[in-house]
Image 1: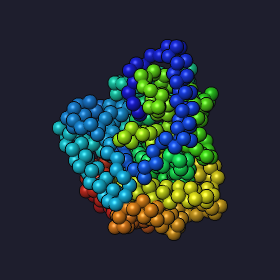
Image 2: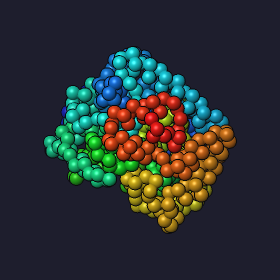
Image 3: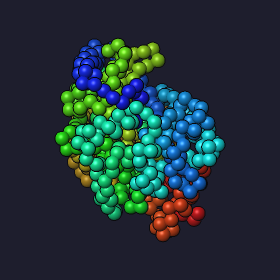
Image 4: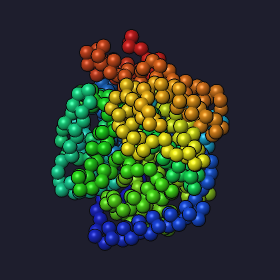
Length: 473
């Protein structure tokens, strides 16, 4: 959940000074963008992958500290709960064999991570929501020791005037519960895809990512269960949104956003300043052009497509779009195929918007597409250019060819374009996403969660796409 901070207690003077620095950095961001001082480097990609540590019965086990010591790799770090970890890949230019190189790097890192997990008598599992987890697992005792996490929990509960957090999810079944901390956010693990874009056109690519989110979500679900209930195809979406809800008095900290960016990506950061109370007013000894306070504030505002400020190797600031909608798993090829779909569609649509083409739908339609897709997956109907489309027809006839064209624009190898997008096509044609496979397995085994996860883990380690997984286990 973001960068560590030095303290979890803040004075009124800290808050006042932080607000002043945040305002100054937000003004400077726009000035530097308008002056062309941000990077115009061609597309660069990268990933963050979250995972679960479990015991031999596939129950969460709070061992991330000992796991990280055993792994001893700077590409790995902690997450909110002590049974979650995060793995990262170094960024690469999105051209040539980048997707294949990413896959090889992820395989190598996961092999090291799995060995480290075994050395501390744990298993590493990549799945959006672990079906075996129970509400009692998400307590303060299992929170990773971190000033940031404790401060976020305290500030969110303070904003709620001490009221417990409510989770109300209605899908195939319903789940209505209360919880006394933000720890339920740890029930969700994701595969977050980053795309660095030219700063002057960043708002076009941000808008493109928003438009693409509904179709991508429809074909990528891998989180159907929580606490024994079958809910949404991608239940991570409502769980995360409700797990850090600051209450009705404030705008949602996790959301699809409030609209498209009109003329500059600076609008997103200005909105952060205008409507979101500061949760972590930690004063940082950095010059204004490092945007330390702006980045910390942005890090506690979780749009499903979130613009980020980063820095090139030469120190020049850049803009990335962080695509947060995708779940961890089911397999490495599936995750790379989802990334290829995002990169290709965002590149194609962003280029169209940059050339003056109108956005193909209203923001409200893009938002409706996204939540409908998260709820029902491949069975949803999507609005596109004012028409209703079945997901299968829209993707196979329209959007996969557009994604292929976008990847061609980036210079991705033709063989890799065919390979990764064919995984998406096969998933659509077979009707089997990770969520669908899990649901069918639970039906076949009369709700045997241990057997589900035993077979899921075995098939995940074969590194084969989920559309090829069978139930003859």
